[in-house]
Image (cartoon, rainbow, N blue to C red):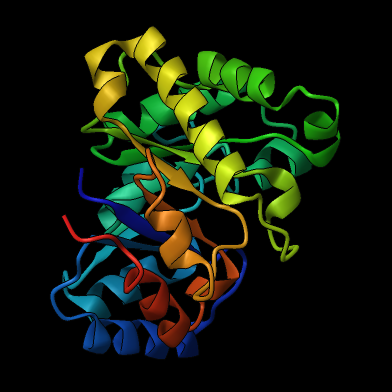
Length: 246
């Protein structure tokens, strides 16, 4: 399975930030993995011109609707038209900050597929849920509710992001990461059969150059969803360098 290293810029980046994408393009060479950067939607079209296919671009969210009177929303078709090939849906910051339900996340994934985008569906538990021993049950429930039955390895990746590790500098132990990825794989196979066996499961949660190689070489790790460390080309390239060779 070829790993995917995806950068999520979140609400960061102005036109001047395209210099980081140019630096990433210059330093990438023959990458040992698939590389994706998800800048703010305002930069996708400019980024597409800048990187010229050196790596893929994605959106950070999309509407369930194709078009219409939905002020401020961005459709998957719009992202595709701007140059995106993927979109993140169900990120914990959307689930918590915007009250997005599993059903809404599933609808967004379906909208992404209809536009020809790969959906990166995020799941993960909070610190209180983990402390209560509910981490596996939370992820299992989110997979059941957020991943449509028509999901397949070609159109979907899952990103496991322990909410308590995002942007905090905290990282689960290697054993905890491996155990949760094994659990998610089990859930995907139970729900989707062979398609679930081939689906990439990314790890997201304070991935940085110092821990990337260790994480990316764990069992069932299909890549990484990187937050702050993806904003600097040098850091992102160092993370990509940690990908295990096929």
